[in-house]
Length: 606
Image (cartoon, helix red, strand yellow):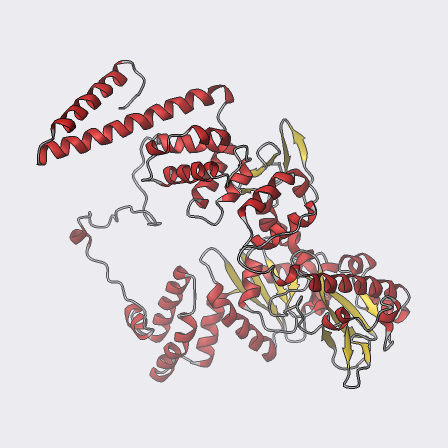
């Protein structure tokens, strides 16, 4: 766990403009910088970066956050990795609470990363001197520009070629990184020889492994680095670093099976492709891709092997599904793989095929009906039986409901019968009249997406909500808040109390920027309400000339609310059991204070 004090110090040292500018062309406009939003398609800039608040916000799609949040959203980095990326820019070492640093930060792994970087440079240089390798790439239609984009290299046909760049050929990092193999006699030799080399990068862009393809008919055709402290093939994807921007531009990510498929598609302008590394798609892959795109298209050959691979991909995806994402399956003609199809048919035909890919639910149902034809009673029963282990793993509740309804229809059963067969809870809603609701018109409740509250005048913000936005704009105001008056009965009040507590204990600097303040509460119960209020504040900031007036008015309203609550409590007690002399005097004083506040017009709607 990374200490909060370090995160706050880190955000105070880095400038969000410097973090974002390498990824987006920012233009100065007044006090802020602007660009076209990288998170949704637009032609006019609505993405604002505030140096004073250390916060970004898009007025179009509502995306917002700190420098850490930007790296997480733009580069798809987990929180810890985003912190490490910022720390490396600032020249800081990330400390850890409650245990040792993660493996990627150990000195041993730093040595492995250095070895992989040096090896990648060596392979790139060797490609320049390898006519046969260059001719092979040209035959495959790979241009010099694409080769450079993916860092493609060549491992010479030499048993100890790496010794040219690693004089200490017997060093431990070479073996631990999988660059060399050591036989039983203790003799070492290069793992990759006479192969086109494809560097594999992690989500921070660091080279952690290699893939090598033979030039001739040797075996194996593809050879990957072994699993190492840096590389776990079930978690990594080839081409993810290069595909990040094309994914956002196209609105989806394409998952293919080989390095050359990724490279060939990029050569034809389809840069949003990534490849698994000799394994079936795993839930880790799905989760990583969903950080970048809400639509994933798996591309497979149309033969039986391709359909088997698609079935494995389907099963891996079920537990990672959400109702706001789409997974689809593209099956190419049997004689084609992505490389050959795009060369034969062109990029536009490939894009059209991806756009019409079969949705996951449709593919699942097609697979079930193909193996269990529902034209007999036995077939229908078997279909429902075979569907159970798949359907019950679907994590997206609304999609699971849709599939259950479809399975019920195919099997000739009711939805409730299928749900009981699957061991799911069958909810039978009470009649509307029994719930005290009008027939045919469901009442609105929080979370009820099918009904809405009646339209009317928008309720003005509470005093706590106003104070929260004021404190977010001017964090120093937190020191002046009387915590005992802040109601902890709503999310805004609870967040206010948390900010005051963090400021008073020194856990949050009094001059923290908006980005640092929101980041402090990212993983807490207050994270969502603070992020929402921060976004609203950027879109409608308070005029600095009236901040003090608004702050004092909100404090008076809190005071008035506290008086009203105490009067209500004492009045109720008087009706039930009577008041003591002290309580009667207290009630009289409160009623007088209420009249004074109303008479001087200090508090409205009291």
